[in-house]
Length: 449
Image (cartoon, rainbow, N blue to C red; front, top):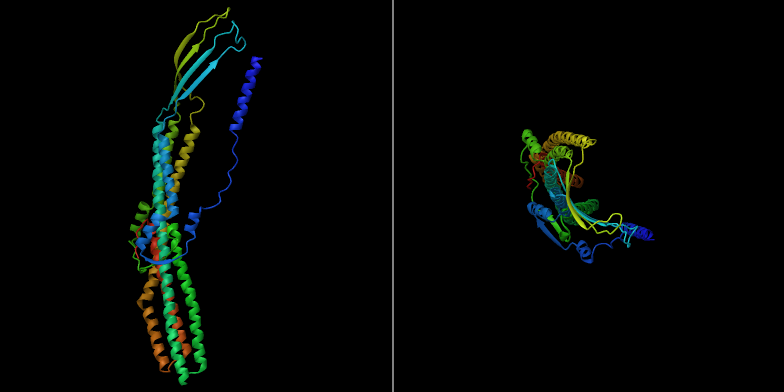
């Protein structure tokens, strides 16, 4: 009967344990952002502010949520270093055994109580090697974070350049619309005086309305480009309409191919991070070799045997203490698979780094080539095209006022001037982007407009 009672108690314990290990139900999804967060995200744009590139990039670094999220990777790497330093916890074992057959009778055999403390000591330098691997991985993560910020700044600088170019295009349309409005007033007076026909006046009105429509489109594109600057900032700036100031006359830090290639190989964060990961993979080989050495477990124990008045085997109450050593024998498993895998990963990391360095050289050469083309385009316009097209327009205006040119010729000259100036601003924007991409490829993170 007693044996059956112990069996029922054991079965009940197993049942309770199975209920405790049952996975809890999935929690209900949250209902979205808090009212305060929703109010912050839905602020209306209420103010316009001019901002310089240096100030804008500083705000990007201070408030960008993506960068703030990436910082947690460093915190995780810090925790990995802490985990690598930790010793194994000691193990406490407590037990008791009693005679359940003769329980309660005078023939009950002695019971036993025992307590042991076991501590495992890692041999072969495993803890040291773990810390080395963790530190290399931490350096790789920190460098990747730096690279994330630098690329974020360059992406923000490109958006800043696009906003400047879009604003200049809109300003060019505003100037053209103003000139055509003045022309329309003059045409109305000339029509009243009988100098021009109604057809010429209608033609001028159509052109003015056409340019006003194009002006609205250009202003919309400029506003969109300016609002895109908020995409790199935190929600606290969502109600601010930033207006970038500055010129697109960007000068690269260097255009010498050898210097650029050297800078890319030495300074690009992605390559530096890959070198740290390669070193971590190499240290991992040593860790796997250290794992071949078995760990030593040392145990200290105490046991007590209770008094027994059994007629056949009487026994007094006594205590025992002892020490035990446990050491696995590395006969069948010498961790050859782990070492082989670590070596393969190290070789792979080296090949990945070699490939990335080759790709970096290609990136630099491509970026330098695109920079050269973009620079030539800008210089072509600055060398005389802009001056010539403005001069041609001025002469056409004078000629029209004197009756030497038709209205269509004047409007065509005006449209041609607009096209040239828009192409120039586009070339300036492409040039600024080319400089930024050249710096990105070469691992140069200084950009000034």
